[in-house]
Image 1 (cartoon, rainbow, N blue to C red):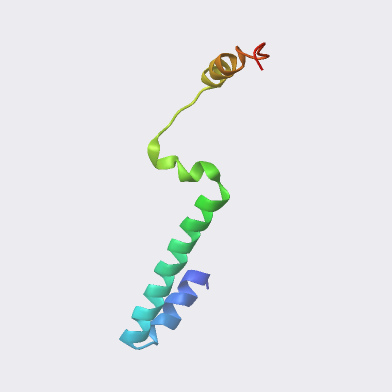
Image 2: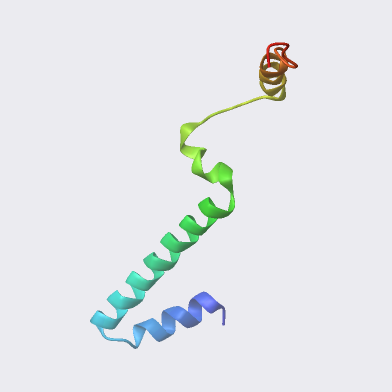
Length: 74
C-alpha cells in the first residue's frame, strides 16, 4: 500500500469535521512549503517579476559602474 492509499484509507474512517481538519492541515503544509522555498532561494522572491538578466547585461553594468574608478578627486 502506498502512502497516499494509507492516508486515504485512514481519512475515510474519520468524521467529516476531522476530515476537514486534515484538509486544512494539508493546505497549511503546502503554504509553509512554498514560503520556505522562497526564503531559501533569493531568486524566489523575484520569480513573479519575470526578470531576465543575461551575462552580457551584468558585464555592461559592471563596465559602466567601474568606469569612473579610481577617481582623482577623492
